[in-house]
Length: 322
Ligand SMILES: [Zn+2]
Image (cartoon, rainbow, N blue to C red):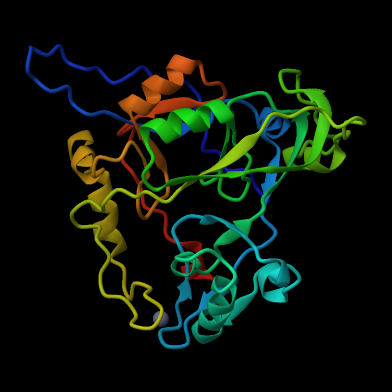
């Protein structure tokens, strides 16, 4: 598995905010929330790897033939019911089922989950628990522990959770992370490079602490709040059975995202303070959230002013699956 190089190399200068007269509103600025720059070794040493072993299967629609997928990994705040933990459909990697079989499975699982959970059980969504293995004893406020995509799984400390709950309660959930293996080293020490040179190999080779180290509580930050699509990027016609878009106009969509300005973003954000960009998954925060994070001195996080560069909509890999 390859680490995604999504981290910012340098903390950018904040966007200039013009001097404003009395009564004028300060323009809204949004920030992409990211892992600070650093080596992949440091990344693995500090953040480790979060594994969600219970994942709903992929779906291939029997009506339109599409692989039904989200634009980003979806992790839900629901525990996999005990009776499904040995289920091959949830445990097998790359399990593909028809839409009909998926609907049947979802019905059975939803019967064991809180009311309203069923509609959120989408193909390839992950259930809890999530197990964290990390070569050092976690200390930072942010851990970037999801090596699948590097985008979806922020793991945060309790104090960050409180800040976010106060400022951005809509479409945000937290779920405690289960520590499985914790290394004996300090997170601020230099990472130990594996003989192979592959950062991922650090996960097999690290020395587990003899005595269970006292690790503070950490929570996975689950963001389902989404901004609206910019004009031109709205989804077109969808399959009546699976809901997958029939013929996405990628060129029009790319253009719409490229032309996205800070002003337009403000109107698409629906007043949210922490949200995802649809069709992409990137997590953005408002000035309020950034300022609050800086106020508590949150560590292992950086903010990149929006828009940093023209945005590209990645084509979903499942569309190209052979
Ligand atoms: Zn379909």
